[in-house]
Image 1 (cartoon, rainbow, N blue to C red):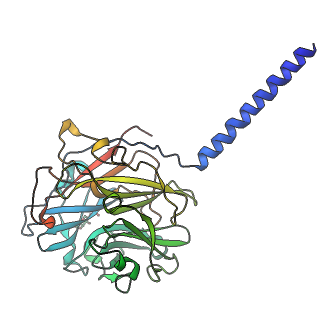
Image 2: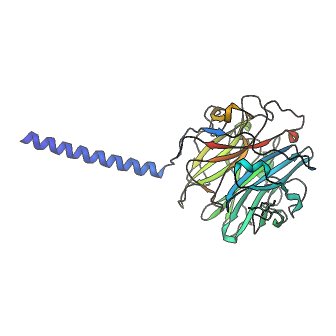
Image 3: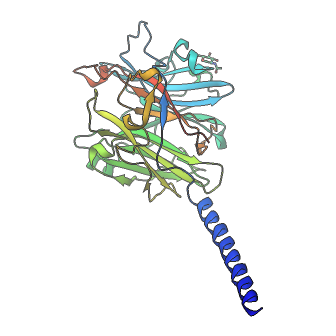
Length: 356
Ligand SMILES: *[C@@H]1O[C@H](CO)[C@@H](O)[C@H](O)[C@H]1NC(C)=O
């Protein structure tokens, strides 16, 4: 009888502690990121190419994309030998994307001259759409109506000239690819120097777009291992989300302009620290190693500058934790041009594989 009681007691305690352990570990895993550490993607064929029009652009690049009011809205860079400008177009399904008319944004108050690498979002506190882009500085324009490309305001800069910290690191690089994301209290502005540094400034949501702080270095690596085109997103709807950072890098392999792929990091705060997620060329967030192409039509070895399709359109840049689509720029591996601006970049879309 004694041993029976003891056995029953041991069994109960064991069951209870097993139960405790299970619930403790599931609480921890819910608090941690639920993201996987390897990714797989399927790419479309070329979806959007330069049009045969009087503009004669060599490339369509750097798309920012949202799905809003039953349409995809894309803002992108146009490239010609002499430089960059912006374009807007919309479509209701990827299959019809290439038929969408281009609205060249130099026809709006954004104007002609160097403007590139746009990011679009809705800033809910002011009920205004913002377009963030580079113009030598970090610039923005606003619009009450995303569907009215004529409605964008003239460029205004976030900074008084190039911040000293960025100027110091710029030799051999370029200050590019501005990206804004806000948490509940602050808006953060990220940018890159094509030299291995990712910068971050911030200002209270109540002051945005004014009052950007002097930048700090958010992340640092070798030039090619932390190149440009950062995207930062909030995963899920929590007020304290996990943040996902993607940065485009140049890896081994030959492709015009260098073979491009993305590394990824996560953090519980937009101020970091950033922890590596899928962060090598062999196990990238997106790259030649983990993208397969429709019917084996590998039209690009580079997976370069673009954006996850967002349907939460506000300044918090919230996305789900799976089932992503990423619109990217790719390029014919055999293309060549003496001038980087003339390389024939086109747009495609990746769909994340593996289900939700
Ligand atoms: C698509 O863009 C055109 C301008 O090129 C605009 O007139 C139209 O309203 C937009 N459509 C939607 C659904 O936003």
